[in-house]
Image 1 (tube, helix red, strand yellow):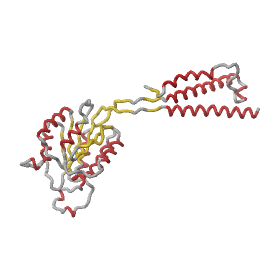
Image 2: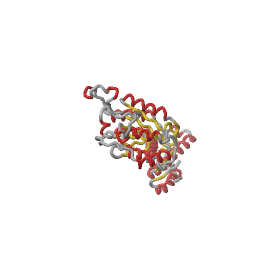
Image 3: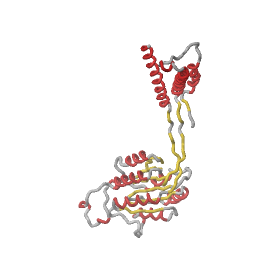
Length: 333
């Protein structure tokens, strides 16, 4: 076990612990009880025990003042699942409620009010995180530009707080998936491959896929060995990903779907028209991605002086009790 001291020079006072054992020409410690005096052997060992307590007290106080600590450590752990990047659309349309294509004939104003798409997505993602206790999560939100909300971590409370923080403020009008995907892939760039890596994109729209970005994205996805899951939240009159469209300029969602499908990477797409579809998609990802993964956990520095001060307090109480017994014995004698 590695130990360090904040004030190592204090350790030079450790030899003071031998003081109780020095012979000063007289009894340094009186036996506080008459019945102990009747037995010289017991008296002798009782005196030695008190000397030992005093020595331990000196050592404990010196070590406590030196302030020992365990330095920060990095421990390799094994989890189940993957390194998962949550890529969440924060465009303005995600603040709107679900309007399913199944109710296409029903007027919008006549439909029952429901939670926004973004709120439902965050609630279900929180349940997803809670169910996967040993995985590492990172998070990016995007609209016009991507924002890295959370770096990779296995601390569930931190991940849940980051998901909740994604609801702050109102989204912008645009949905720039390209910048969001690039930002998500940066989590893995330059890192050792330790297990399954996936990006979960939750979005209800898409921007035009620029030709200049296609080669860059394909290279990064293959080189970093990333699996890609897209949960496409389909709006009321939005295009179906599997329809035939003559001009991709008017169907960027389809262009992105075909791009991922032809990129020769592990890819799966889900179409969610209501909260139940979204829940089923997340549950399916949870079922599929359950493989062993190696990751490094950082244990912060731990100060140990507090425990030594507690031990010193116990030793002081023992010495005080012996003095109380001694005073009472002197009063009775």
